[in-house]
Structure formats: C-alpha cells, structure tokens
Image (cartoon, rainbow, N blue to C red; front, side, top):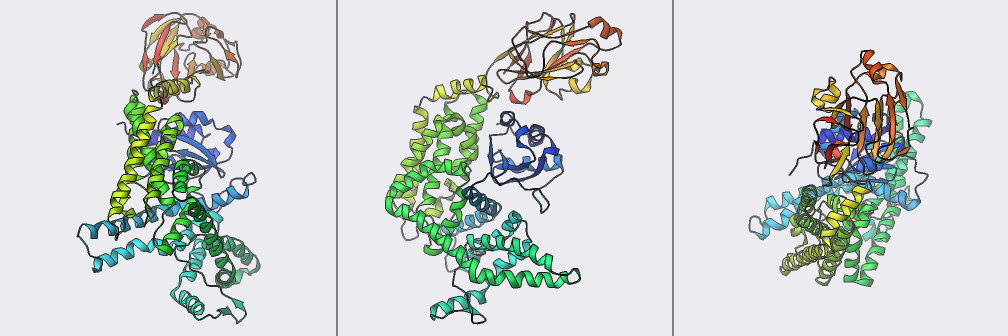
Length: 629
C-alpha cells in the first residue's frame, strides 16, 4: 500500500487553488479540508480532483471542500506550514451567504457548530462502548467505583455538550467564546436546574422580579438552545461595546453583556430552542412511527446523499435528545450503521474485482475505514459515487440491512461512529439476543451490498468506466497507456542532463529533452493551447485526455523577449496533432549564446502511475517519445 506524501499533496492543492493569495482560511473536519476562497471561479475543480490523494471536491455553504479521507489531518498540517495561515478568525472575511436559502443556512450553522465537537463526542462514546463490553466479559461490575468513574468520563462530554457547542458556535458567529461558554454553564448550573425543576414539580412559576417567567427546559445534552443563545450574544456584545464608555469597558461591558443576555436566554431563547428541538424530533420520529421498519430501510438507502448534503450533522442533536430522554435511539443510528456497512462492502467488492492496482488500493483502504472505523467519505467519494453503479449496490445492501434491523427492533445506546468496532453500543443488557440481531443485520448488509455490487457488471465498471473518465479528462491516475509523440526533430536526451536544476530535478514534472535540429514545433497530439508565453519560448498544451505538456524551447531564452520566435497559434486555440504551433530561428538563438536544449515535461506527472522515455537518440517530429501510464 502506498503511503500518501502529505507535503506533496498540500503543495499541489495550494497551487491548484490559486496560491496563498486566493485562500482566506482553512479548517478541517474528519475527512475534508474546508477552504474559504476569495474567488472560487479561478479554480479548476477537475485539476484539484486529479491530485493523487484527493478523493473529491464539494462546494457548499461558502466553503471549497476537498475530500482527503483518513489522512486529512496530516495534509492540513502541511497546508498550514506552506501557507502560513490557520483557521477562521474574528477578522476573517466571511463567504457570501446571499445565495444560500434559509434551509441551507440552518444546515450550515448546525454543521459548523457540531463538526468541531464530534471528536470529543466520539471519544466519550467509545468510553460508553467499553462500559458495555467490560461488564459483559466480567472485567468490571456496574457497582464498582472504577465503573462509576468511567461512567463520568464517558458521560461528561454529552451532559455538558452545550458548553462545547457554545465554543464552536462562538467561532461561527464571531463572538467571544468565554461569554458563550458562560451562557451554557449558567443554564446547566445545578442551582438553576434545581430551581426550575422544583417550580415545575410544585406547579409554580419561577420569574425574574416576579414578572418575567422562566420556563422549565432540560438543557443537558441539548444543541439548538445554546446555538440560538450564542447567535443572540453575537448581536448583544457589539451593541454593549458601542454604548459603554472606554474608561468603563473593562468592568461594565462584561457585566452588561451577561446581565442582558443571560435573562433573555433563560426566559425566551432557551425555551424556544428546546421547543424547536422537540418539534424536530417529533417530526423525524413521526415518520418512523408511521412507516416502521420501512423508514429504517429508506433512511439507510439514502443516507449517503444526506451526508453529501451535509444534513447528517442535523441528526446529531435529535439522536442525543432521544437518547437523553429514553436511554436509546432506534431509528437513525440503525440506518447509519447499515449505510456505513454497505459503503464498506461495496468498496470491498470494487477492491477484489478490480484489476487496477491503484483502484484496488484506494477501494481496499476505503472499505477498511468504513467497515471498522465508520469513516465512509473515502468510500463514498473515492469509490462508490465516483464509479456510480457501486452506489446502487451499496443502496440495495443498506436498504436490506435497514429492513432487517428495523424488524429486529434494534436500539443504539450511544452515538459512537457506526462501525463494526462499535457494535457493543447496540447491545441491550437485558436482551442478550440483541448481539445476534446486530450481527445478522451487519452480515445481511455486507453480503447483499457485496454481491449486488459484484453482479452489477463490475468488470465493465472498473475498467470501462475509468477508461471513459480518462478519455473525458476527468481522472488520469489509472492504468491507461498514452503514447506521446515528439513535437520536433532532434536528439533525445534525459532530463537529468539538462543544464537547469528546475528541469533536471524534475521539479516541473517528468519527461525528457530534445536538442532540436529544425526550428519548428508541432502539436504532438490533439489538445488546447493552455499557455503561450508572450516571449514565444514556452508553450503549455493540455491534451484531450488530460495530460498537461510543457514545451520549453531553449534555456533562459525568456531573455530574448520574443526575438527569433514566431508563434503560429494563440492561447485557447484548439490544435490537431501535427499542426504547426511555433517556428524559431535555431541558428540565430545559438549564435546569441543560448543553449537550445528543449525540455518537454508532463507538468501533472503526479496524476500518472508511470512516465517512461520510449525512445533514445535521434527522433523525427511525431515519432513516439514518451509512454504515460
């Protein structure tokens, strides 16, 4: 298995995005780099997707998202080193939201606030998985002090999740994170909880100054109330800043911010957020109540598209609310589990069936990631969605598994990423057979997805589909042999013999050089003139199948300022193999003291598995010189 060169991937990404000057900020989630760009229109999406190590590109919520997979953190660190910039800050220009509809805006807010918190929740959820497994194997008893302490560790992040959400919401709304966290701590304070609970139980009304009622709501494990509270804070803080004199800001501003915001949160915003969260939960589970196991199957089948839309983060507060209320969740978590298993199984079928070593590696690692760790974006964007038909196989398997899981009335007692390693979170302590049921559900999903993907005509999909993508210039990293012919007559020499470190060191790409014997350059293949320097000495040609070729006539000949060079085509012009694209005065350039050696390099060499020199010695124009795989 080839290890990703994170620094090389990062370097190529920065170049393809238009350089550091076009990047406002970058953050990352579990599998994606999320860039805010000054101008997305200058970025060639196809070129970004062709970078080896990039699984796909998405544009959403004002972000240019590059899907990396499990190596995203390593690539992110290299991006930061190269670009000398970090995540969004309070002074960071924000993407234009004018084109986002209200629904997209809501999803963007929830996703942005939830995504940074997910690692903490996963860590806590895995502790809860241990608390299920260890008593089952007799290593712990539920009455032991160790069990109780581990229970606190596993529950802390969930119970006080409003504090974590407050921090990320403050980043989203560009307000003070410590004010935001304080608001969360206020509504979770034991005395506040006691006051509201006692008033509710006694049938009394808790009120400020005996006039403004404080409605009871349970805020532990909640998400929406604190997001709304921090949104309110983002308006109150600058307002207070404007009205407080400079000499009093150190003490008067903090007091007024909290004195104004906290009561509004306790009496209005918090209860409204709680009501909205409950209403959303009621709507989602109303579908489950109406359709039963069919609903589980349907959500499992369409879940990859929910992930693509970014809506899966919106499910997190719903799941947490249900688990906090009932102790388990029996709908979305089961559908997610089946969807993840299906993506992994479909990728496994691709890996086994494919004859292409590069695709085998990508699909195999993606299958491992999805099945064991529950990280499906490498499988989704790198395999099933890219190949299209395997997505159908995954959907068939996910629906089948969802129906089985719904029939068995499976329950999830935690929100750790659905995967084989987290199966213990689906076990009911008083229902030992639940272990058999979840294993049957996983087996049905995996087997059906694998067989469906394999039988859909996979041999043709892996080879023919990728061949088609290569022909369209969509992807060029798989095994397709391209023959590149010479653009001029002369003598072939290795790049390593070129008297220029940039070319000799293959910094611009792999290829060869020709010492010309005739002052004419012709198109070595069909393509488009991508670059033509004003000085006429260098030409960039993009072929119809995606290769990017640089023909650099002479060394340091840029200093001739176009003298002795006569271009025959212009940038953007389509050319056919053999068309004359440049003439130059060979003898005059040599007489002027310039080395006429002409490097010919594939500037997107990283998109290919292998580039080899097919000819040595003397060559005529349009004779084969390179083999590109």
